[in-house]
Image (cartoon, rainbow, N blue to C red):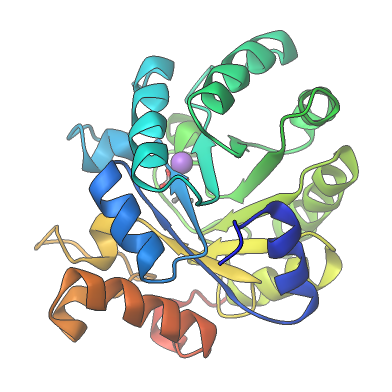
Length: 265
Ligand code: KIV
Ligand code: NA
């Protein structure tokens, strides 16, 4: 199979083919996910929560993102790998260039940044310099201390309109992918229809162009908490390979996410 690229993902949107993505943090899981058909992987700064045992992503360091990006790349040489830029690593465009370069040299194909129109110059500068950018709107975990907790975003009409407006500005600036986290399904649909770049949802309803889940959530590894938008695919399929395969199949045929995994407005 040909290597996955941003052009392939763009084509999948145009053809109405759903994109199935998961987070990965190490070589063994990256290899297994790829062989089970996962379209791309995100080295998420959620590694702060699920690997390091922290209660937010705020303390995650660049050096840690570089390390985990190297591990994932080693396990899946042909895969499309996106890496998160951690908290404060893109506070200015100059910082963003230097830090994004480290992630690209560690094996990333694209970097992801959380935020809206304040990132326009940074996104333009990165893409001009050869670094593809995925934007991230809705719930922004790095801003948990400003938001006052992990809550669904964009429930009010004005906030929803604002999120759509920001999405259009980020696309205009050169973002080539957009993650939408914890927003009403109707807003996920509206933004996905308005943009030409693929949208990847987590708790953003069934109508985004693709889905992403944190690996540990979809394997049900936290026995006392499963987010509303996630499903335990390991319980459903009985093996790790089966869990990844079933997830890919259900994203592709549209059976995941179901209504119970989505937020209303
Ligand atoms: O860090 C992460 O896992 C993410 C996903 C939730 C999109 O940013
Ligand atoms: Na993240």
